[in-house]
Amino acid sequence: MKALLSFFVLTLLLGTSVAMAQTTDTTRQRPVIRPTPPDTLPPVDSAANDMEELVDSLAPAVDTLTVSAAAQAEINKIIPKKATIRSVILPGWGQFYNRQKWKIPVIYAGFGTFAYFIITYTGNYQEYLAGYQEAYNLKTVPGQDPGRTKTAIVKGRELNLNQLKQGTDFWRRWRDYNYIFTALFYGLNIVDANVSAHLKTFDVSDSLTLKYAPTLIPTSAVSFVPGIKLTMVIK
Image (tube, rainbow, N blue to C red; front, side, top):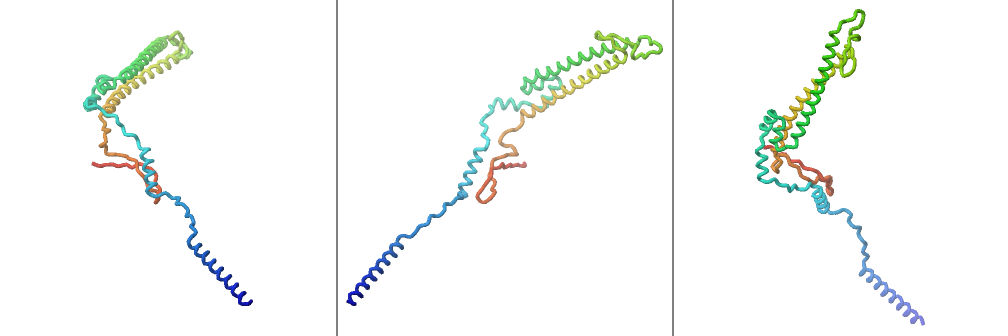
């Protein structure tokens, strides 16, 4: 009986050992794979490419407007000195030489406006001057203020000597101002012809000594900011 019980216990222990061995092998054949966190930082090359695309999108469009050979030849014929001399001789002639004919009516409208004011102020000045001379030549009444008692009628109004003197000075001053304004406007006409002629022949080709272009400025190992690069060539 004891031998049978011992055999039964030995068989049970052997079965348990085999089961544990199989369980260990199964665990080794199926290792636990832990997911790794994704890389949240983009590659350096990818970030640089994205910034380059952004800069290209912000870059100004290329001007495809071309000037014909005939038009370029006409522009090259413009000489600033000739335009200046023509405007000195006759206002508007330099603008006509620069092929800016729309400025000619503006110039003569300005001269016409100043001429109108000069003529008007000169007429008023002469009327007040004549009235002042008339009142001044009147006899002085003893014991009275001649500036108040001596009067003359100008433009339907009776004005004393003091008022006539003020009116004469006022209209003469504004007439002289308009002479000065006309001279300045004449000088402006000359300057405009000269500057416009220079701008007509100004070099705007690709061979300028100062150039600009979009670029990328690194701020760290993986980031960039768009910027502008200036290049100056000293010849």
